[in-house]
Figure 1 (cartoon, one colour):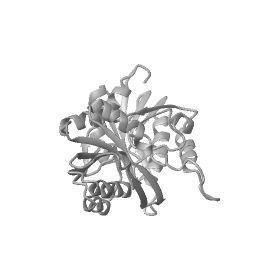
Figure 2: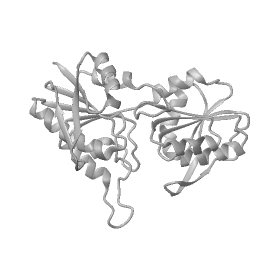
Figure 3: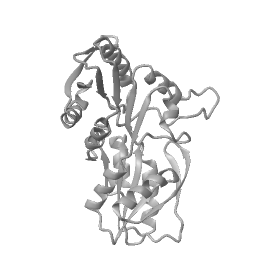
Figure 4: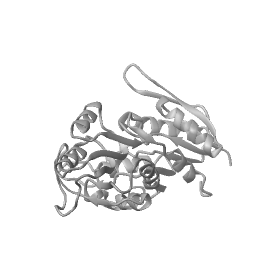
Length: 297
């Protein structure tokens, strides 16, 4: 059955083109413009019965509006199934109300997206207490991909096994730091974190663990402000690390954050291209293509 890859922004167009080439699909842009009052106008230019919408959802508020409008336009053009390929999936971190009156954004945005698409494919969704993405999207199909094999391959290329250790900056990173380390064939340790605020964290590491003279790679799923990486790097420097670098799946940090990360002693931050960012070093197109090539799509 014919498939069409569509994309709504110029920053996504090259990635959508690469994905279309790998799975043998047609490529059709979604045209967008803005009215004087800021409202978004959307026009879909092509759709097949099964349409793949490549749409990164970093800085998501305007992009979510585009998603809903574009999905409606694609339905009007005859799309029976819309597969949302969102390498970074927004609004997943708040899965409960921490204070009276707070909206549980994961539930709200999950319900909205579910109204417009039939299948979501994403990479390393940033979940906390809820571990299964199907809990967020119970009425549609979800595919959650792991970037661990890609990061492990990258680590193999750049690390010296005898002197390298992977470090997960907090307990939430334990499961997949272990997987990356095992596939890369290097040792790993995981730090403990207490969060005091959006940009205030305390990091500890068991004093028995030897870091002195090691080439350290901090490995995390998401770098938002970089506060966790900075706190981790400060402790690793105190413990005598020879060099500290960092690898992340999703890089959301600003230029100011990058300066702080470098100032904390992290020589280099590299990320996958789930979000367009100057730190991008690992391409996820092959991972997405493999999922789209499955017989169920």
